[in-house]
Amino acid sequence: MKSPLKILLNLALVLPGVLSGCATTDAPAKLQTTKPWEETTIKLIVPGSSGPTRTTSKSENLNAKSVQYGSRFPLAAVFDPHTRTSYIVSGGQTFYISDSSGMIACFLFGGKLGCRKDYFKMSKSGGNLDLLISRFISEFDEQKLASQEDKNLFGVSLSVAAPFGFFTAQSLGGSQPGTPSIKAIDLTDGLLRLDLVSEGGKFAGSFWIDLKARKVIKSIIDGQEMDLHTDKTWPVPVKVK
Image 1: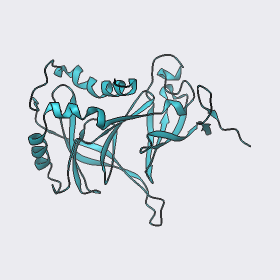
Image 2 (image 1 turned 120 degrees about the horizontal axis):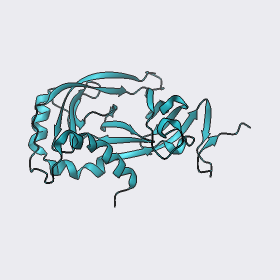
Image 3 (image 1 turned 180 degrees about the vertical axis):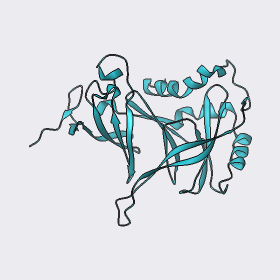
Image 4 (image 1 turned 60 degrees about the vertical axis):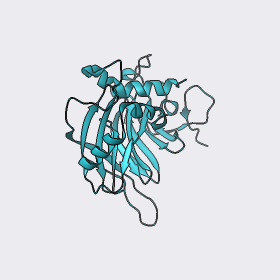
């Protein structure tokens, strides 16, 4: 049985395709689209390092191609000049990160960070996206894409690291979820930091996320570090000794 988190993340990814009138009851055997791949850009977060050869994390807009396949799969084809690898990834997401293991598409949905690993990659395409797309289409159909959904998608709960209200609509503390605005992103030494402002602007916070452990390891809300090891329902500021 799928977890509630995965159900929500899948809904967030497929809803745009359903609303655009692409819904179908029977998935076609082959990947089908009514439009050609279109030119677009994606936001790549280039990792930094605090080691001897210190480098600073930064964001870059990379040229890419995008398309909607079937009812469920917005896709993007992109070449990462830093890893010298081309990828087919989930398209239209907020930002992307990549390393030697692959590329991940990331998005915020309420109090969760959704992450989807790449579907396909080529290390010897030379940045030729048409070649990448041709190879991808020859090896994938909609059923194969669907079979990768569960293993490619994972989520990290951010709401466990913030006071109640941070991830609610307009920060009012009601039952409706609210998705914050991203003010800054940093990826250094494998830790992803998101600087967020809640809906309505009531809260501002920074969240440090260990993507390998898939959890928040530190958060600072309105200048106060949160105690993530408390037995309380919602985290409270760390007590200063």
